[in-house]
Length: 323
Ligand SMILES: NC(=O)c1ccc[n+]([C@@H]2O[C@H](COP(=O)([O-])OP(=O)(O)OC[C@H]3O[C@@H](n4cnc5c(N)ncnc54)[C@H](OP(=O)(O)O)[C@@H]3O)[C@@H](O)[C@H]2O)c1
Image (cartoon, rainbow, N blue to C red; front, side, top):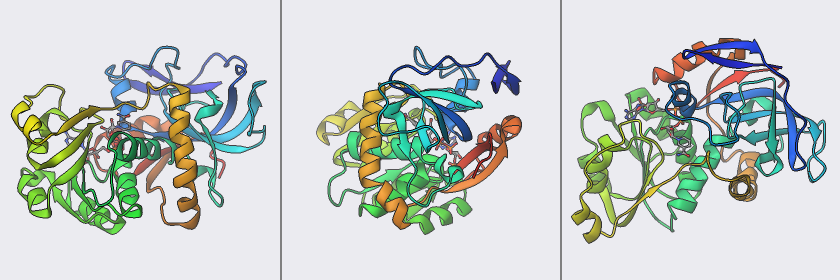
């Protein structure tokens, strides 16, 4: 089997030992496309090791064809096209994954588009509706609005009638976010977002992949009973928390990671996607925003591009390239 290996942070497509047979609850997928995520950059830098038992190979999501299944697998058959949420191992010709982390494709979807679905839709759904507990009319602040997760969260907010405000890194990204359904936004290179978000009405929930550098400003714009859901640390891991403000405004700070959840917990999120999101994808009310793709052999270039903060939506890697 060929897979991407890491040699002192350099990515190379090399022959690797074959995978074992799938366990009773697992399937083996021949990978067509793999999604690239910001977490892959952190893993390459040694800052985000795979959870215990997960593959050391990069890659948190794929689409492809089931080529083998375990004795207890129900509802999936060999030859079926699927997409899957992984704890690792996606940058490879084949991957083995628990059946709870596998989803059938939305009707009308091909394998390329399907590879852009699992990680960002699961992350956005988990953190907006499960951790963030959005209630009718709640207003949402989305940082990194043009990211893979951000462009998905904007669309979910629009679909479920939650006004959302985005922060982004340039005006082109802001326009794209507005056209996806964001209500308003702010270019983060023009100073603090605090006044703009306050004038907009403040936020009942914040989806925050930035962390330390935004904590003080987030607390200022978070409304009474607001939830700050922390999903990343792009702006650092240590900052001063204003506990007075937290107490008086009954603010809640929630840390959330998807990757380390059990297959069963991931399965519960995917079940919710299947029930509430897949029909909307089929009807065209939601769609994954794909920026660009590269052949897997050029994964290094793709990662450099993602790291440059130029992308809007998803970056994909073509493995077999089947459509
Ligand atoms: N906890 C979880 O379970 C989970 C799951 C999935 C993703 N995440 C996190 O969610 C975030 C988005 O992931 P993704 O794969 O969708 O990302 P992505 O597509 O790679 O986009 C990330 C964007 O973040 C912005 N950014 C970079 N550095 C920043 C900084 N220091 N301050 C503010 N913004 C910055 C950049 O856009 P601009 O230049 O336009 O601002 C960049 O394009 C990442 O932090 C990722 O780790 C967490």
